[in-house]
Length: 234
Image 1 (cartoon, helix red, strand yellow):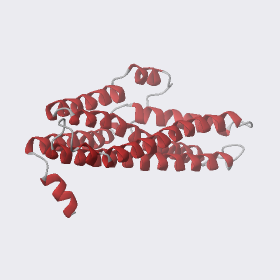
Image 2 (cartoon, rainbow, N blue to C red):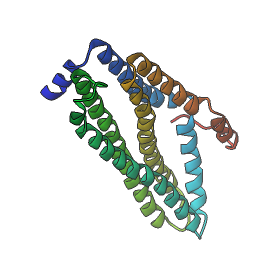
Image 3 (cartoon, rainbow, N blue to C red):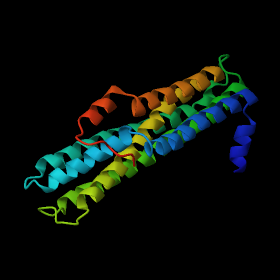
Image 4 (spheres, one colour):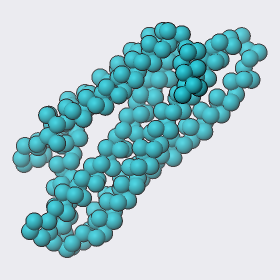
């Protein structure tokens, strides 16, 4: 904690204000989207509804090779981002270690070098968070594969297998979504190296883009129209 306080104390007030706004945007939107999903149709609850339909139809099929292939495809997407995240972390660590060799360059003053060091550490923290989300998503998709492998041949009356299987897949997708959201905010974070005001604007823009895609996108309307019944919020 003392190291974190020293790091924040080394930042100018304008930089601290920009960082606080960034955290408010990220954390605030995360809680807002979860709260809003309980009251309004969005990608989260709409896709969860389609997953329940998927699992119900899966139980009626004898051949489930297509279902296993679909899950494997989802796992590959998550695995790609997990691997990419590790590469980004390694590259950022290399850049952080090379800052001390820039002391003779007139481009960065010693104070700017320390500021860049703090920003790079925070950027690494973002991608570490993303990696944990992607790896947890991979594990949950693995759990879903086990559930499909152990699925009964037919759905018995009173069985909740399809709902529970859809819940596991939705939780895996949610972890993947949180990891992917980290990339969006990491792109906004990079703007901080240029300007604090631009950083504030970039973080705000990311929230707007995420909101539009989650609650107002054309693909959401198509997913809702493709369902025979109204999708209840979750």
